[in-house]
Image (cartoon, rainbow, N blue to C red; front, side):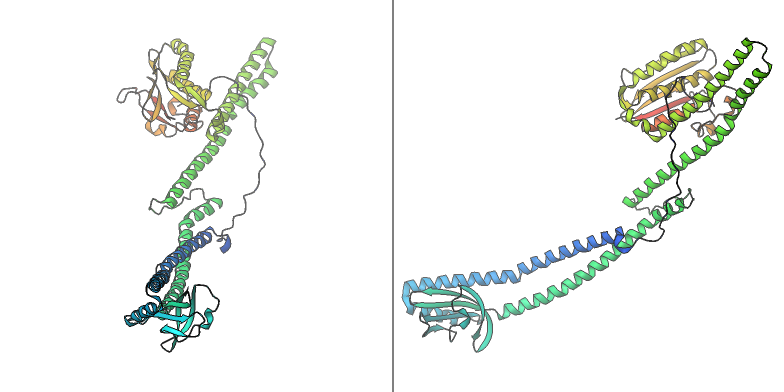
Length: 485
């Protein structure tokens, strides 16, 4: 079925010549380890895992060994304060009595006390024989080794100076030291396990990433090798990798469609344009050879110019289709009211319909706000109206309608013509395609190609169906469906 290429108007265009180059080299082998994204993700995982493990160990240490140390310090401080208070109440004798009472009830044998005169010459009470040498001139809190019950042990001590006295209060840390040693060994072993698990996890992540990316890499390598039918296999998980694969496949399908279109255009130009060019050339040569007067020569030249204008319009339509498919006209998008565009198109073609004995009806809402290219939308609707008028018999009706739903705008053009066979509708948007019924009518087969390209540029699509199903002839209803917003 023939579709008009465009309204007769000149469109400035420019052919840009691009340099060609051979395909870039493709490294088919896996990337080096340090350049591998999988390796970097694996290292990131290992670092995060190690940091989390270190934080866990630090919290565990603070909650065990640290808590024991703090409890010991609290107990020693409380005991020292209580003894100082006892000294204030009962003097030296009361303090010595209090120390002996505490030692008598110390079942675990952890308490350490030493009460001496200020000069350090005489021991008054306690379970240490002498003042530790390491404590000379130190602060109030310290750790050192002392002889406790004849055995050297680690002790936490607090020094308290009273008038004429020196008091030492502490706790035996032998058990806590052993617990701390066990905790340290556990931390070391846990750290080794953390490193092992981090390395294993990093290897698994790198292997998983490589496995999930391998189908995409294999497909792109096959396409680079010339197999344009290759597609990325889906794992069926519906995750980000499957979404990426679906997007790549849609892109490859689009590229395949464009490549087929380029091949089809090349073949169509070679066949369809060769005839009018040869005909124009033959007419001009014949006019030069046989024309007997200026009037006949002028008529022949004018006919040749008309033929060449038709060829120029075809190329202009091809350029507009290419611009729309490449998105080059997206920069011209602006807010508009589509009703005004449709009304202008109906006004242009109303007289043409009347000249063919037809009726052009419109069913338009008050407003249809849209963001798009006004000129391209007007050209698309004009192509549909021109087509409908061309194939509608005298006395028939052409209808232009538009409706807005919650999600899209639908512009339809329906006619009373012969319609389009279902097997031809799939090819109706291809360049230079003409159905068998339309080969006797003038046209280039580019009209619906431009309409479809404009619809795709605006994020919509094109639908063809019978205007009145079951009627003979059924007519044709063409709908441009555009998304809102």
